[in-house]
Length: 483
Image 1 (cartoon, one colour):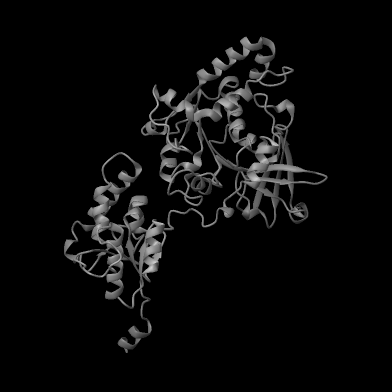
Image 2 (cartoon, rainbow, N blue to C red; image 1 turned 135 degrees about the horizontal axis):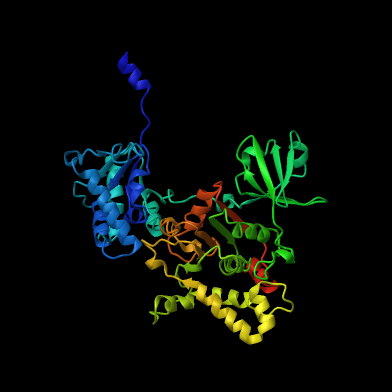
C-alpha cells in the first residue's frame, strides 16, 4: 500500500545547474538563488575564482565572498561532498537543493575541435559528462558569457543566462511615478468624496476602484476643462488622499530663475523642493532637464533657505570613448573633466537676467554685470563639492544635498553603498537614463537605478518621475528620436 502511494506521489525531477565562474563573480549569493534545484561547481570554476581574487575591484571582492561562502558551506560537511551538501541550513531556508563539487577527474568528453586548455571548454566538458551520467535529469549550464552559451547550445547542451539579478524582465514595466486619471475618474470616485483646503493647497479624500493601485507620492494628472495635477499622500488602501501641487511653471514660483516647462518637470520640482522627501530618482533621456532642475533646487535650498550645508555631486567615471589615462591633481581636479554637465548647467543658472525676477543668480547678473556674475559663481562653487565614488565607503553626509549623476552605470551594490552614506538632514537625488548604460555586464533590467526605482516606490519619503519631453533643442529632440 505504502509503496503504491510512493509511486503515485513521485516527486518531480529537480534540475542540476552547473555554474560558470562569472555567475559567482557577478552575484556570490547566486548559490542560494536556485530554490529546490541542485548546483554543481566544476573544479575549473574554483580555479578561476582563485585567479580573480586579488585586487580591490568589485569582481575581486565578489570572488573572495563566493569563496568564503563555499568554505562556510563545506566546513563540517566534507564527508558529504560526493553526495551533495544540503543548502537548507546555510541559506536559511532560501534554497532546499544540494551543492555538488567536482570530486572526480573527467577526461576525453570534449570534441577534438575544442582546445581543452581553455577554462570555458573544460566547464562545457563537465556539463557533457553530467548529461551522460544523468540521462534522465535536466543538466543546465548557467553563464553570463554569451559566447559560452552559444558554444554549449551548438554541442546540444542546455544553457541559460543568470536572470536573478534582473529587477524587471521588461523595463517598459518600470514604475514611472505618474498616472493619467481616466476621464470618468470623478464619476467613479465621487461617492463619499471629501475636500478641504490647507496652506493654499486643496486636499481630496476619495474612495473607488483605483485607490488600491495608487502608491504614496505617485503623481496623478488629468487634462480637460478642469485640469488636475496632484500627488497621492495616502494610498494603497480602500481610500486615498490627493494633494494639489505647487505650480512651478509660474514665474512667481521660479526656482533660482528656472520654471517648469512641462508637466513632468513640475512634478520633479515638487519632489526636489519638498523637505519631507529624502530620496528622489529622475529618469529621462538627454535634454529632459534632470540636472538643471536638480541643481536649481539644490542651490535654492543651500544658498537661500539654508536647508542644506553644501551640495555634493558624484558620478561613475565610465568613459564613452577610449580612456584618457591618469589625470593630475587632487580628487576634485581629477573629477572635474567628468563634470562637464555641471559646468554647462551652472552657466545657464548664472546667466544675466533681463529683469530681477529670477533667483539670486539672475539678479546678481543683472545688477552687478560681469563682476556680479563672477562673485556669484565663486559663491556657488564654494558650496559645490565634487567627490569620487572610490572614497565613499565609511563616510556619513550630514545636511548635504547629494546628487548622483549618471546613476544608470551603478550596480545595485554600489547604489546601496552610496545611499547608505546619508545622515540626518541629507537629501539624495539619483539622475540617469537607463537607455545609456556604459558599464559592461549591466543591462537596463539589472542597473542600480532600475533597482532603487523599483524598491523605493510607495515609501512616504521618496519619489520618482520619468521625464518624457526633451527641452534642450529641436535638434537634440529629433536626434534622440531618429538616431
